[in-house]
Image 1: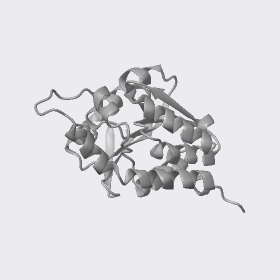
Image 2: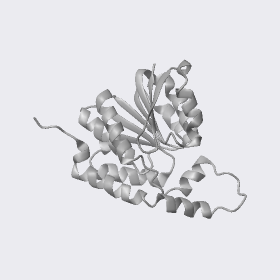
Image 3: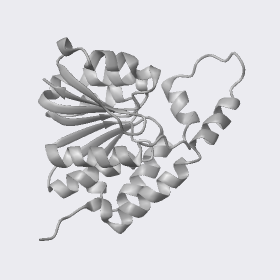
Length: 220
């Protein structure tokens, strides 16, 4: 019997390896754009922050990617929604799982136009572009255009927006749906974590100890 794992496809594996290598420079790139800000400057908007970080990959970890691949394979969602495409590392793991399931689609969101273009080139090069739609712009606006139920959610964009994005999607999230958030160690995600860890809000939540931590919440 032959088992399919798109993550082993040479094009997908090469793209992931190349992007992870580039992501090793993230800390230096972040320090560079932060150093260019004038002392006492007003806080950046999400758009300004996204544009300033246009060369920063902000990736999910490789182990985290393997985890979400397995979750999507197991759950077999028809519609996967991702908040935060960046250069498309996590999107490739999601789309690979959807491809191997034999059905489904990935709808992702990204605020920076440069990253959208780069990610779409990668998706085409690895042959997964027909499974992925990237919505460019403010996710709180673009995600309102999704039709039908949402069957799996990955939240890996700006952490202070994870809860508003979840609340926006909630009317379309059925019981049993998994919602995964990355980087539980970041203080800016705490409001989100407080929400999904409170059972009265309709979730059963567990922290999975992979890299910076992932919160896996099941809609009750």
